Length: 191
Image (cartoon, rainbow, N blue to C red; front, top):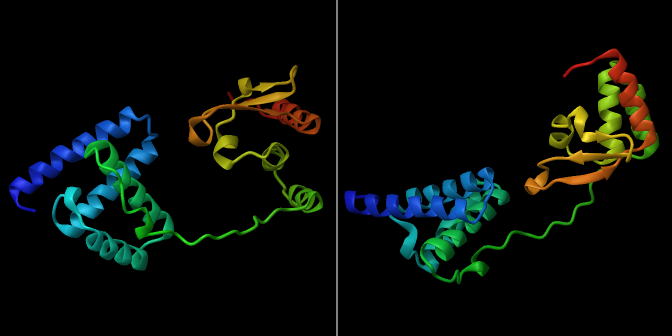
């Protein structure tokens, strides 16, 4: 980009970052959408405020060939956000790129298979960790961030903080999991 174009891009990019923050986007979303805008600007070597349909088709065709569909969707969403909140224009090109619809069933272990995995685990802390994750249906990040104060044995529930999407939730605490956690707590009291 020439100097004038670079200054114009920098100004719009700062507005983009500000609007992402003002719209309450999470840090990971801000990072992904801003990276998308930088990638698009670098691809065209100009500010992406006046791209044509053919420009976008060429860009997304190249992106599909070299990146994952999640990257393609992030770039599309980041550019859509840029047009809507920075340029105050309607995004008219949603049909340019549509990821394929894939409906895969997740691999789910049966209770017997879970019991085998837990019983074949030699360290108590991993047994309790696997039991906790499975019995309460936690994501790995949720399990890692659990604190002792999040467990309410009187109400038999666990407070999951800052889960996916920055949301908190309360989930039931199974009696067996509570007993396993108490047993582990007696042997290892890490703050």
